[in-house]
Length: 316
Image 1: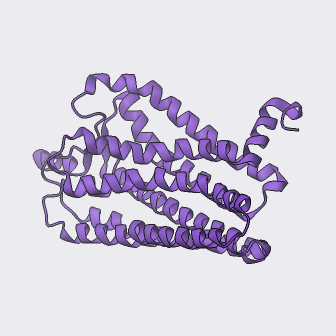
Image 2: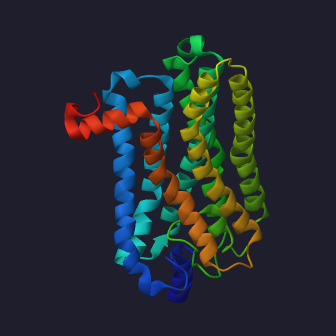
């Protein structure tokens, strides 16, 4: 009975790892990791506060930016507990239920971020194509409905994932490839047929990542078509400049995500450090750099931040 109980315990527990092959250096990652998370939280929190308190920023574009900042905060909070515990405290064991919960939130907020980026592309298209009707098209009610639809879509698609993982037996290795839980990472450890999980994971990627990427491409084709219809060269450049920050956010999110997905599916022969590196970039880089990009590229945000820290002496 004792042996049986221990076996069941092993099946219900996963072991997280930091950098593959370099456990002795994990502690030295703790400080920069804490600084990275602190900077991420501070940057996104400042964006949210500035948009809330500055009435001139109560416009559709900035509401969508607030959604992006809130999603980045949530995505960072989803990975932070286990990342910090592994690298700072060397606590590597996590129960199946905790792993599944973290898995749901990471994948869910990843889907939400993808949807928010699509919504921001729609916002830019309306602003450039219909500048005089911009405020009447993107009313507060419409923005709330778009945000709710983005969240509902992601939750409904990701919700089956915990149940698909929960039904699988884990009787081989219980060592995951990251310091957090991902569906494709846990799925490979199962000692049962995982075709359902694999097919559903692929469908989820298609209905969120691939579909959103296609919508973004179409949106920017329409935006470019609308920009070319503007008579003034100066106005064309000004319109394109309003899209630059969003393009950076799209690249920061999709390039690491697509790379991570391809490596997990087709890069089994690669060194184990490569999937770990790509997954860390996907989870940590966009939430860290999005506030920087929008603060630097958006004059209104930059001015309000400078005024908040330096007073009214600067920015007039």
